[in-house]
Length: 142
Image (cartoon, rainbow, N blue to C red; front, side, top):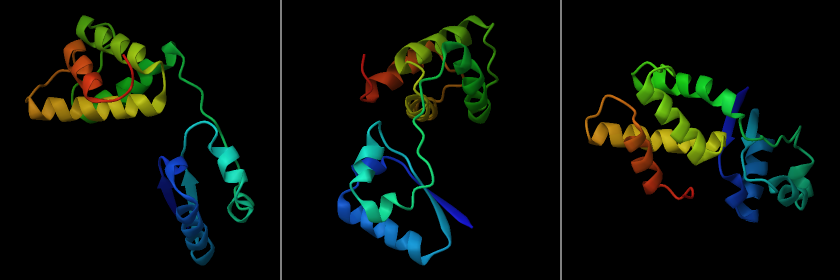
């Protein structure tokens, strides 16, 4: 079975949701719809689709203690090794935690922008300045 993931599915109009339901019915696929809080209530208004939902889960923000292991995983994918004891890494991790409030989706978006800025500017370290510059280019608050 193939699994498809649709992020920001809460932005889909009724016709888009209906097309997804039809595709789901015609093919042997699993479908993961990711949306903002309240998305389940929106889906409940479409019984043809809602009846096919196996479960819905609302993620809570990560605890500040849980953010460093997530960052370590991303850091490894970016190239540099994450060392929370190193002052620059620790400060960058604190800035990411502060900016995102532990919201996993925001961490993903922010780090994607960090990667972009590091590539454009040919940087090899994730610093508070890079994190702040990435935040300024995204609409995620101050």
